[in-house]
Length: 297
Image (cartoon, rainbow, N blue to C red):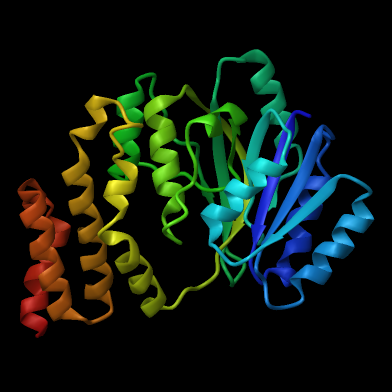
């Protein structure tokens, strides 16, 4: 089997069919689909049962207690047998020909471990935006730094990775957001990466409440740096950037608090970010918010 497409879902019954059918419709048929139900409480189990029955052996499923997206993806890997893995969120859809394009590139470049491309995003009003491929360099440290410093992003569904990566790495299971940031950053630090100019997936954007965004950032802010910067995993050259990264997460929280009108909290978090990494004082976009937070108080 060339590809395994792993689809974690939680209460995603209304949108799951679109994701699965976008894989079944691919011109490249050397693919299996693994759906991991992360403890859904709606009609998702029934939807999955119908999809498995209709696909006649091409779709497999597993149900687990609710443990979060990282655990669901890891469990899907255990059930899969593809040489390359693609993780597709339950509300997204592969573009026609995406897997064939990956297969073609992998045949010509068999030493690639992590093959990525661009994506379309569609908001709830139907507006579509293009997001180009990541600007990967030949140097692993440059890729690592570019990603953790926010110079480019990576999204689920827009790339494939060699399954051997999972002999060394896993999605963290102790956090429920930004788990992909940790996983992708470690891959960039360790493996051969290549990017395509194609747009291979449509990512459907759903609104999240401001409160939810802040709670999500808060939940990981204090621990994400320790998860990412594991000395048993990362090269020594990468470990030097741990405090810079930790500070940047507090800056992200500061920005979210500022836009939520929680100015006193924003000021406190900003001061913690600068204490951790004083060089971030030069980032005017954050300093200006800190100063305006005093005026707004």
